[in-house]
Amino acid sequence: MLAALVYLSVLVKAYFDGKFNSVASFQAYMEGYGVFAPLFLTSFQAAQVIIPVLPGFLGCAVGSVMFGPAIGFWCNYIGIGSGSIIAFFLARRYGMPLLEDMFPMERYKKWSVWASRSRSYTAFLFLAMLLPLFPDDYFCYLTGLTKMTARKFIWIIILGKPWCILAYSLGFSLIK
Image 1: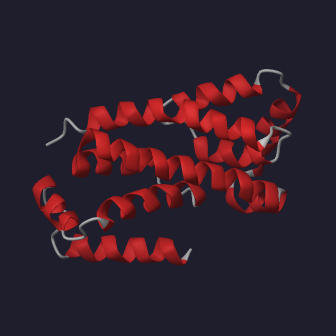
Image 2: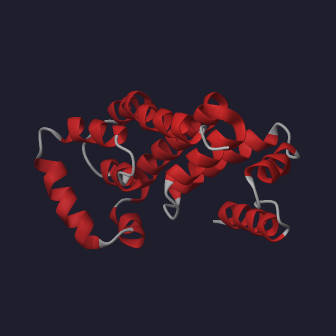
């Protein structure tokens, strides 16, 4: 939570200082952070999965515009992948009370029954990771409460998540 407040305060200050008036001014602002700029993006992307407030495509857009499609992709992929795995393990550790605090219970009831009974949940989860604008954060937490092994979940993230992020990275890198 403290990290989210730090990120937010840095971004709000930069906004009011006029650093977001154009892509060029934003790039110049981020270049001032040197090597820490990509680290900032990577950790922000992990945090936005763990604390699901902002959609991940916003960070993907920023990463691609700021660092180009290659570096933007890697920062986003590492951040979102790490955050997804952390969310899975948080759900494993803290269980249902954590999900109750973060998500509407109607959604949980609907999906948890299906996930626990379905033989196709693994395939569904893999396909979900491929799709843009899918509520992946929620499914990372939900999957932490299923019987799926951590190893299988991590492989789904490693193999399924990059394609959506790559599409975002290439698409958003065209914005200048």
